[in-house]
Length: 233
Ligand code: ADP
Ligand code: ADP
View 1: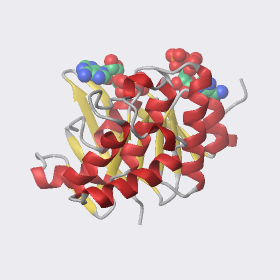
View 2 (view 1 turned 180 degrees about the vertical axis):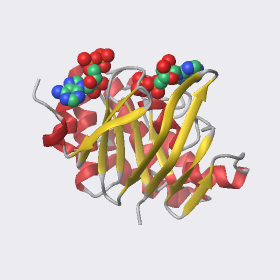
View 3 (view 1 turned 180 degrees about the horizontal axis):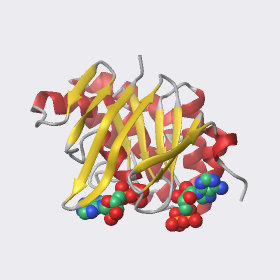
């Protein structure tokens, strides 16, 4: 079964129909790059997958859960959904008053009920994975944007998501800092993580994605393997 399945998702902002009847299945381990012009509805669709946006209709399946979006989700359903999806934003959204280590371990204790010892162990492993083991005791403001974004990735991974959602993860970064983030994402993809990445990084999409989805005016207008979808500029 697909890890993520969207069926006839519609999202409206007042009169504006931002996502139109989008259906989409994503397989375990699949890496999907979502591209298309500004305003196409990419970010809105991504945010609907963990209910940061509320669709007006449709069905959403993530991991073991199916959510009908035509009615309000219960608090329990919402928690299950948020737990199954790891979101990484353009702005890193770390807690500024907490060390890097605390940023990653606290959600594990709060959301998964892990003990401090367990959470610290997972945190140490994740910091290795994003190549920032030496920054455990630092505060976010002391880190570069690229380092902060890698911490945000580690924090999302700490909840063992079924799928990682990336919303323009390198757009706020200088190109050379973005490279470190893309490298970590490349490694995640190679490890078999299921990923949906909204991005302008066409080279990354071409190289790492299994499938490229092109959105325009709220619809998927084209999709397929990168070599079929991405025309060399
Ligand atoms: P903008 O800055 O408004 O996004 P661009 O011209 O840079 O305008 O890109 C428009 C969209 O088209 C981008 O979101 C990008 O993902 C996509 N895109 C750019 N180049 C290609 C390409 N060679 N093949 C497919 N899609 C592309
Ligand atoms: P993309 O990620 O492809 O650039 P978005 O999903 O951000 O596109 O936006 C899709 C459309 O929905 C755009 O026309 C945008 O102006 C509109 N939109 C996005 N967020 C809101 C909002 N909070 N309120 C009203 N309109 C919005």
